[in-house]
Structures are given as structure tokens and as C-alpha cells.
Length: 90
Image (cartoon, rainbow, N blue to C red; front, side):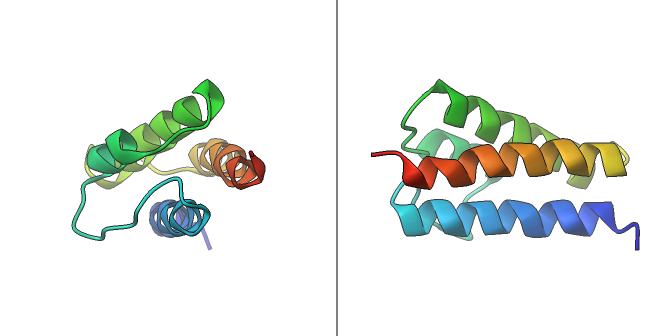
């Protein structure tokens, strides 16, 4: 339906909850996006980079006036896949 900003918000929340479930981040709804990034227990630079890119996209669209688009959503979804694969890391 073209509701890309809402989709980004929901994707980001899903990422946070999955990272919490995997033990890489303790979910706290009161924490800012950037605080979440700092709290991430990253198993490697790919995960850190994916989380930073996702955080920038979400913040830009939700708070910074950047238009949320299909392209922004697609890139954010790719970053989410990288983060979700982190669950499989030893």
C-alpha cells in the first residue's frame, strides 16, 4: 500500500525483538535508536554495519524528513536479513 515509513518502523522493531531473543541486544522500548546501536553485542563488523545502516534509514525517514520509498525499504530489509542471520553465529 506504499506505507513505507510504517513498514520501516515495524521492521526495526522486529529486528530489535529478534536481536533480543538471540541475546545480542536487550530490548528496551525506552531506548533511542542510537542507544540500541551502542548496546548491540555484535558478533562482527557486518552486523555492526548493518545495524548502523538500518538505524540511519529509520531515523532519516521517521525523524529527519527523508521520504520513505520502496528503495529505502528494500535496502533496510537487506540489512535486517544480515542482522537476523547473526542469530546463527556461534
